[in-house]
Amino acid sequence: SQTIHQWPATLVQPVGSPLSLECTVEGTSNPNLYWYRQAAGRGLQLLFYSVGIGQISSEVPQNLSASRPQDRQFILSSKKLLLSDSGFYLCAWSTGVRNTIYFGEGSWLTVV
Amino acid sequence: AQTVTQSQPEMSVQEAETVTLSCTYDTSENNYYLFWYKQPPSRQMILVIRQEAYKQQNATENRFSVNFQKAAKSFSLKISDSQLGDTAMYFCALRGGSEKLVFGKGTKLTVNP
Image 1: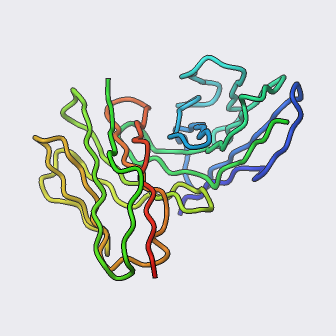
Image 2: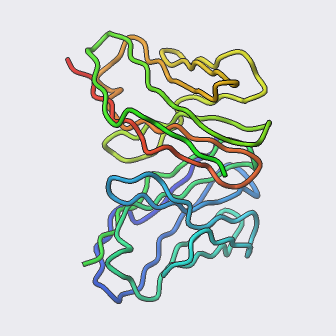
């Protein structure tokens, strides 16, 4: 069966520091991968998605970037965090368009 | 543009009773999928049930069922025999022919003992 893991689960970072959140999917090949953000009291916002290694699409211009160095690995990064980057970040995967999207456990980021 | 609207920010139900969460949506596509996700206090987003728009039969998963009214663009979730573990945020979501999964703003459901 397929599983998705992301880490770290909780992160407290000062303003201006770098960020790296990692996500790995197991049990499937060539998945579509996604990064979502959920700000406090809000719904989910799609940040990035990837349909293959090295292929990244950005939905919202911002202080973050994403990379996919391997087929089942997706990384969310920032060179300098802003206070507004605080939130709950969810990695997700699917087997393609119109298919179910499955989510990881999420990562809490607090920028102080 | 695709939109999903959940008009009930909060709901409560007594344990063992039935509750229905409402969702309406808008899309210009004919082939799309609808989902209900549950987000408990742990914050992990868990798939509850999904419905393919081309299927007329309403989806059912144990105590969870949907009432899919395609013409009315309505997709409600019915939870039968509510349990304390059903306490969570519930999100209705729509996915068409793109990578986007469009979410509603959610309904906070509390199951009372």
